[in-house]
Image (cartoon, rainbow, N blue to C red; front, side):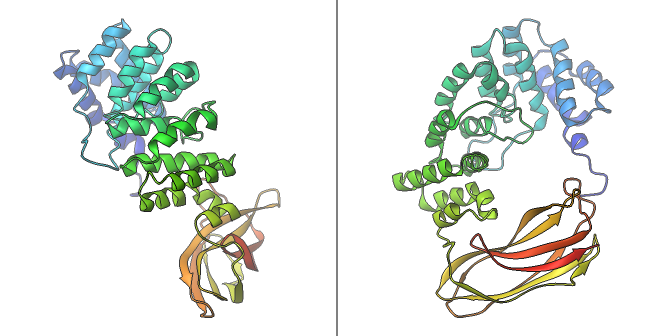
Length: 372
């Protein structure tokens, strides 16, 4: 990413605001120029989410005070739906996110049905996964009932909204209090979807659930595999993606579900980190040599126990290699690890550290080193 890049400026700027204003002008709702100037007058100092809220606030000044009339105006101004022939990576334009915020703020109390109708239309242009969560919290029953219909919609963006909008840990999204008993029946309808955009959301939803209830995810994946509604290759992809967090944690049940034996017979002849004293911001080389008694599929990771500010340690797993070993034949691996000292989400602290070789979720060897 180029130095000085700003996501908020890339997504919300005069050009994108003019696009939104132009859609309303083309529909005869209001003139674009005054709307654009009003938005730009307050946009610059705001962060990304605040910009979305600000554009929604300005919209409220230009749309009719009556919500039904405002909803009709929004619907009239919507651009054509996203290309229905695509099957993935078609998120839409962020400039339409404020439309969902407007619906949240003005339709959620007294116009639930009309709001949900409008959400269904907007999500065909830009995903309403964030705004729909307000309706799940305020009108859980009505929103879930609508989602049962959306799960079989002919439009894959609408189908995806069901899975993505109900995710337990949607990044940036407000929390929802749904249980797996409420959401898994919806995923049952979506797991056999023919579009990767939908099945990726299903797998991400399952990955969220694994943080609190891994066994329910493993059971559901096994049931789906037995039902055979989804193509075997796509089901396998979904399972790998859904269990990625458990795999990094070395969860035996997840390993077994994907066909990796946690008790694989491994002999490690070499495991080392060089140098054994590394400066923060510097790099080290991790090398390993091992063999298995029999042919076996392997997930090889390395785990670093990083020192925290209070002197305790926290493990962080990094992917190394997925392979199938040949019985008795040595496997040699080499990996360069850079100890970045300027990450915003992960801070390094000096002291004694440990790096471990993890194969199919089991720690097989360890080596000590110092970060200084």
